[in-house]
Length: 177
Image (cartoon, rainbow, N blue to C red; front, side, top):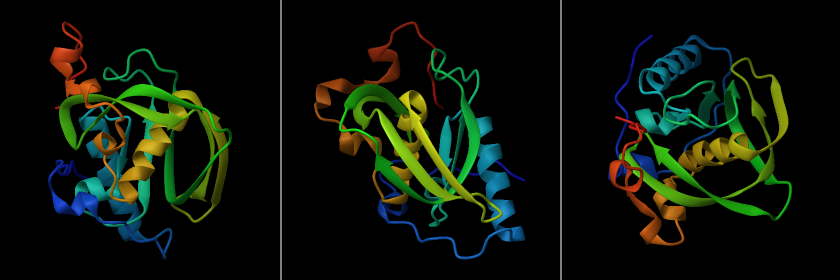
């Protein structure tokens, strides 16, 4: 497997909707997932969407356990989620600070649903159906946004809450590059 280049905000490929996966458990899909995993881990990401490495498929991975970029969040199990569908479980929204490997060195305060149900498939085509809340719900929404060509700055309500990490959080090591 390999660490792939992550596209940066401004690259038009990040703005295109991704296509559904139609074939599961293939060598090509497993190779993509291996590259995504290696890339996410090498960059200390909480998740990664296939469009971020230039692959226009509805594939995301995520998982957090002791990530230095998110030191105070609850663990999120490593998950491969293909062709996801999200459904909010309540109308409650909460703003939280987010960063992105495609927007390195920056953070923004982003509103997200506090609880949601996500459905989709794993790499073998087995169904996934989970209800989650908190940081887990935030990560899923952030990654699935990439599949629709949405980057987190597009969701920020007040641009005064968007800036360089070292300016917003002086003295904290939250680097993402």
